[in-house]
Amino acid sequence: MIGINIGPVVAGVIGARKPQYDIWGNTVNVASRMDSTGVPGYSQVTQEVVDSLVGSHFEFR
Image (tube, rainbow, N blue to C red; front, side, top):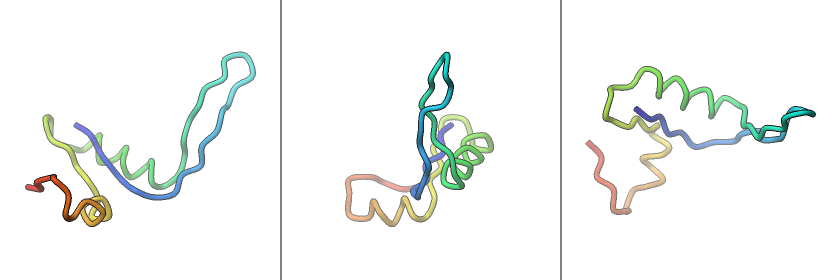
């Protein structure tokens, strides 16, 4: 399963001893919820993602 969303995020490195790059924000939270509630073997995308891919080589079902 995978959840894909488009939108603003905050990104940065946290941690002094073991620095890690991470991203935060509602965009990430929505994609995470889509991922955790999806059907195995399928991808879930928001309407904003669909709209941005109109005219491309993707087939939406």
